Image (cartoon, rainbow, N blue to C red; front, side, top):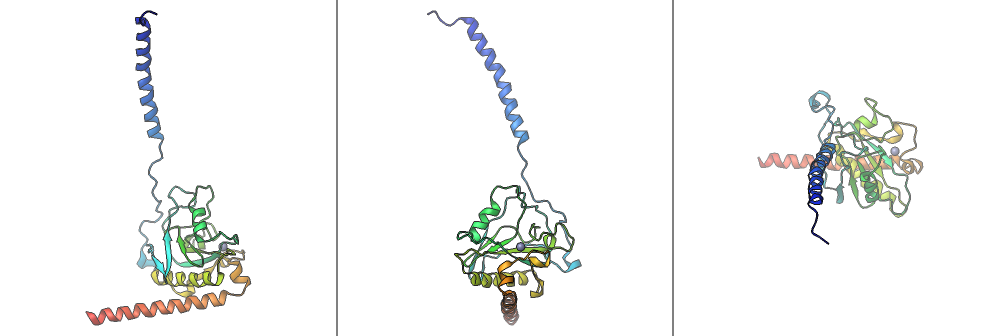
Length: 245
Ligand SMILES: [Zn+2]
């Protein structure tokens, strides 16, 4: 065969030259279409703490009475995370109602942080040996079933789910939850009177086992005792700090 015909070479060059702008345009299009960095939407960036007496910042608890707290936050772009800052006025207690052997706090954390179109969310899940924290306490979560009621559960509560997996020790889960509640009450300057059950916000029998096994009073007494212990320790620490001054 003879050498390449000059006409053919020119055609290839023209095609390559045509291709370059097309590739550049494609890259530019992809860059422009890319989702912007998502940041939380702040409904009230500055809510005057002095005005209402409630706190709007979030604390990070590393462990609660020896129980490790794992912080694995739901991504900002998840439908479960509205990312709206609000005041922290009370705690709301739930149960997962999932008795599967593997349905512990870690499994629920994976469920909450996974890819989904669902909007249900809460802040903490507690089992008999661990606590998972999936949303900062000062952000709204959809767990009370009362939409955006101004003084309602979703807008003001920290949602806490207790695991009821058959492989877990439910009474220990209740004890662990009581300690978490006491720590949160102290951190946000609330009192044991600020602990509500999901049932208080809607007709649902939740937390189901706690209610049907008549353990609500015991649970509330545990919270009171743990809270009193934390308050006493804080008062003692304060007194010691004063004598050292
Ligand atoms: Zn519930």
